[in-house]
Length: 305
Ligand code: SF4
Image (cartoon, rainbow, N blue to C red):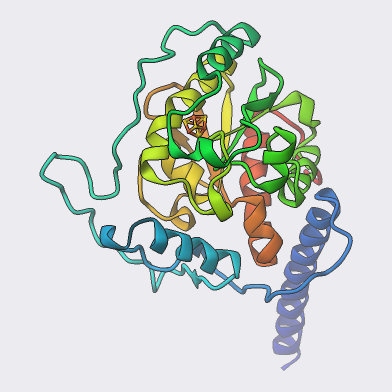
């Protein structure tokens, strides 16, 4: 009898210890990202990863994908557990590409671009007063990129928002301020890293960039990647991740995993976009896990280890 009581007490202590360590980790993360308030939204009891709603058909196109992102932004997503993971194999298309692969952008434009600032200047000059896609008509400023031209770490988002369009600098709005805190939590300042977007002009009403716009602008971010030559790219959100990896696979299944860029030997870590985190607090812990993987890869000290 006494043995049973002792075993139960030990087990209870162990469980309480696990819970305590989990809460401590969460608090530490909140402090590291500069978050001081416990904010809205359910905290998931997820076992695995967060997953977007099931993928949409091609016929639904960009409109459906916008709705899909909105559902993630609202925190209205399915949780991926071992039980509900769909193991449907990708459908092979007639051109031999997987159904999750998308048409690649031109990769030859800046193949031999110089490294660092010289290369970035070449690309910026080539863009000029760009009118290669319809996004040019609604922009205030073309938002090229900012940061260290020789950075070891690069962040790539989807496109400028209202604040970025006005200032001509990527990630300066609320989402950008959160990104700046994330960068600080990783042990960098913004000037240490390089930040760019898939498209350089603001899509109207912050809609997703359309396929033709990504094809038109894609070679320039590819050139920026070649010029900066980072060791790691953090792909921020679904649009950037899908564009860089040339896939339609959902961000929930891609985030937290390492990929190699299809055309450039650089490691890519997809994670959720800071704008999504502003609406769905329960995604933040996943982003911190993803960023810690990047820190470990780059040899940065990880707090608490
Ligand atoms: S989004 Fe890119 S390709 Fe389109 S107009 Fe702007 S800079 Fe040119």
